[in-house]
Amino acid sequence: MTAEVLVAGSINADLVVSADRRPGAGETVLGGDTVLLPGGKGANTAVAASLLGAEVAMAGAVGDDANGRLLLGSLREAGVSVDLVRTVDRPTGAAYIVVTPDGENSILVSPGANSALEPSALDGAFDGVRVLVTSMEIPLPTVEHAVIAGAEAGARVLLNLSPVAKVSQRALAAVDVLLVNEHEAAWLLNSNNTDPRNLLELGPYSAVLTRGAEGALVVTADEVVEVPSPRVEAVDTTGAGDAFTGALAAALAEGSTLADAARLAVKVAAISVTRQGAQPSYPRAGEVD
Image (cartoon, rainbow, N blue to C red; front, side, top):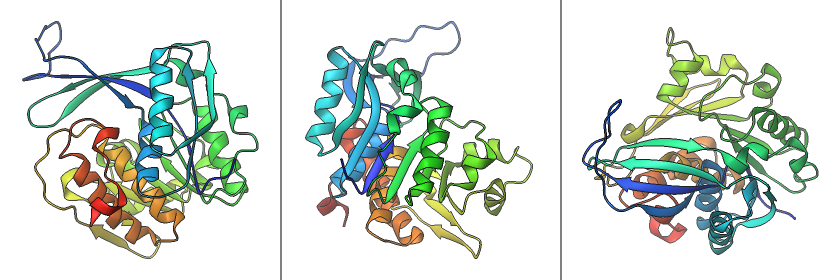
């Protein structure tokens, strides 16, 4: 298996319900019909990158069940190699998503099979890989192994540190691009000093801070570059961050600078929020311009 972009991450079935508002503690709220869609931070990232023309392989785990077969089919349909996806004796991961009329969402993730993705699943997986992308819906030891092994193999390592968690100094030092949103950055910096340049003090070579509708900041040792987002009317923000991640990885694999990759990524994420769902909302290369 060879690929320009290798994504090591989660593969989930998204169960999406629209509602006028999210329920509070102890409260029941009636919603619309449940829609079953392919998702997971890892799979979303892989699909987003593949639809933009990158050669992408997915490393992950699913259960031997209907959702697992659905998700593998969705990845293949998007052109993603699934040779490194393992079928394990756990239910396929699931995300329970409530979407309100303003396009915002609340998500509860049940990791299921994603929890069974072991570091050994990535042994020998980095041959020819230009960009490794990994995120935090899989076990932390697997993430850290992927980061370190990917860097040692010569890949540019893009760590989407979401959901935010404490990562070892050794792993952070191997990261080429640390990708976080404003909330994750505040957690990492203990909310005391939110200057994005302080993200580099954690160890990565560079960082990208996403800011939703405001776009992103690209942080290097030399400068902080502001990348504005196109103004759009949001319908569903589910998976927008993963669309950004996939587009960033695809552009980096083509040799773009980090700032130019972020300029593409904000456009892709902006398009995605104008459509329902995660993977079904992602544009192909010809739609972005």
